[in-house]
Image (tube, rainbow, N blue to C red; front, top):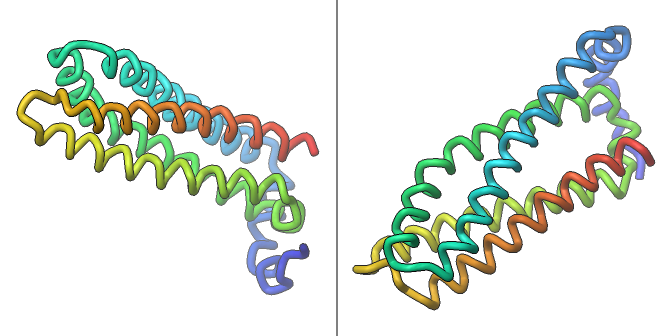
Length: 166
């Protein structure tokens, strides 16, 4: 699959600036990886806590629900920074990325991660509305969502490495 000529022409000034610089690729790639390490690391830690709390007491479940609510903004901020830096890297080499099935697989995994995150926050809200946060069916679903989240974060990291090396 080839990138549209219009997109190539539109991004050419940025691609040229990016390609002629030593510092821009370094800073943008660092920003991308740092954002993913931050957001993904926090998300995986929260997912692990959710898996643990799902087997725990009502008090543990309430603590985890509060922790999730407080941390989602940080995860979303990290994801937003990774999207911005990802767009900058994509537009620096549209032809290479546009034609890469691995790149589009990574984008699909990110879309699945966002859908899963949305569903997870809805579950958290629903569980939080129960009188004792012991909604076992809700916690089973939340546990599944946390497991899917962890798998997606690692699959995205793998795809990110693969897209650069293939």
